[in-house]
Length: 269
Length: 197
Image (tube, rainbow over all chains, first blue to last red; front, side, top):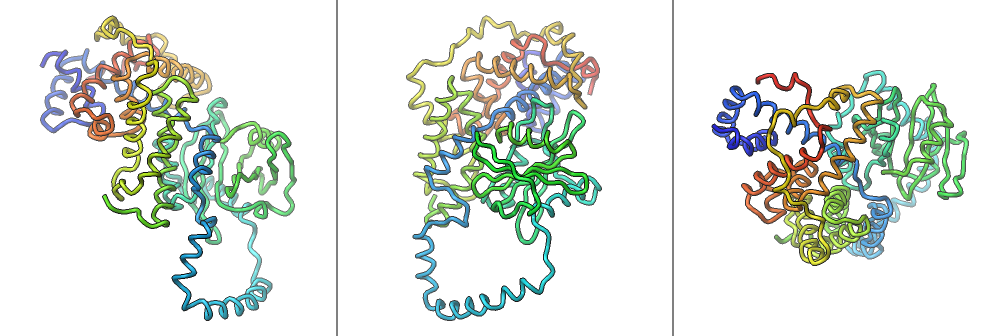
């Protein structure tokens, strides 16, 4: 095989798009041709770097908001009135007994709430996930690519929300992996960023500002019109804020003021 | 083709479609010159996709379907406008000379366990690759964007770009060499990469 003939086969080898016969042919050539072997190595590196370059481009937050608003793409909790009307019509025969059940529950639930042991807020429970990751009790799904990780996490919550992402590349901090956890029936998307001798974990879930710890210190960012809550647990600092129905908690061992500055300064990617 | 007919299914479709927003924006940024144009291109893609959601076959590749809509819209509406500045690719010396593959610069960039310094270099490399991609002709750039950035197979890229699979392979091969030739040594592997398999 001439080197000129090997060029496209090298490309397809890099992309794992060869037939068995083609692969045998090009591999035999590469064994005998240092120049093409070198070209193959170069093309592999180039493909990896182009892929990495692509990951640096993501849709602006305002574009996402515009599309969500324009097309009425909302979380399941905010479905349209017409949708509820259809459901009500479908289940009309069951409405009366259901209403009775609701009344019974209205009486029983406060009693159950009062007698059961109170669980800690989801925001504090989320930080325990961080401890389990650090302690090796749960392992991360390695991020082969940020897109793949985000797609996987979003699918895990049926597309109801996506993990909040931060571009910390200017600090040389990048996402290395993530997981999906469930606390009190609520799913939390966890993404771990590391680099530059620091680690930041981002927890994303659906909720309200009621999910912030009661003793959290609040800070209102007048420019962004967002309220930030800072709190700490077992040496871990955290910054909590809400964007629509989505809650984001950034947690790290870096000083809480630095973490707050990071959360305020950094636009979600 | 039938499917996605109920409101619930349409909502599900919409939520699945929005997952691919970053990918579509990424493709758009390498199709058109200005961020505002990419913005409009993606907006219109969602208008078209969500307006014809019943044409999507549930279970098929939604990311590829959306990419095809985006590319078709670009093809129909943007190609009449000013195109990318095309370079005369025949003038680019992308021959596989060994000395072109050598790079003292690369010696400073560890491939594994990058430290702070290498991050700086990696950022510079990202800019270089972006610039290089924008300079090469569209017919070579798009297969790279689809396969290397979009993680599509040759067959999927061929369907999106409406060309034969063999064309994807040849244009990728040529396109990568064009990109490489403009990086002037920013991409490379150390000599250990020359070892035989």
